[in-house]
Image 1 (cartoon, rainbow over the protein chains, first blue to last red):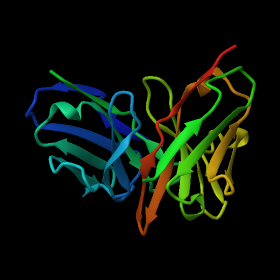
Image 2: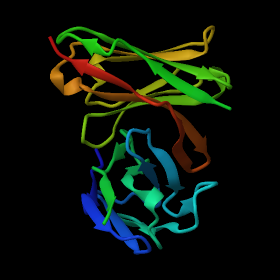
Image 3: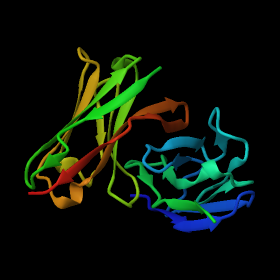
Length: 107
Length: 120
């Protein structure tokens, strides 16, 4: 299985801060990576697909970069509604696998 | 508007079989592909398996020996059966729609999830 390692596991930031989350794959997965946001008590929601494509309706402060084994999700200016847990997911190989999640909290 | 809704027993005894159903409304189950995903409390997501519109399946090898997924086109829902449950199977179980388009492959629609507790 391809292992996905996210860091940090949690972070605390202020409104307006730039936030970055990294995801590292144990094997080269090209650009076959998605990012999801999960707000407390809710199901995950797609943010970015194919490493860098913003899903329709997702605010432009979210962006994704990377390819191969190293990927980054950035929030350019953190907003209160962005609190939650962020998950990366690879779809290069089966079984599909997710990172352990990064919990984003507000200072 | 397409919606997914999971239903299941909530509490299951160890060694027993879990049966979950995902009801699809607003779309035909025959035209898309569907997955089950679970999340133990405070932990990450685990993909369980996929059911294609053709009826074919892909299962996570870690669960394959205990897992069966099936589709009921007459009632527009799909199901999961997981046997020989242990406490490690305690989790919120989600059903989701797989969006597959060329090289793109992602979960674009999720149910709200159903909590399953394995306990005597």
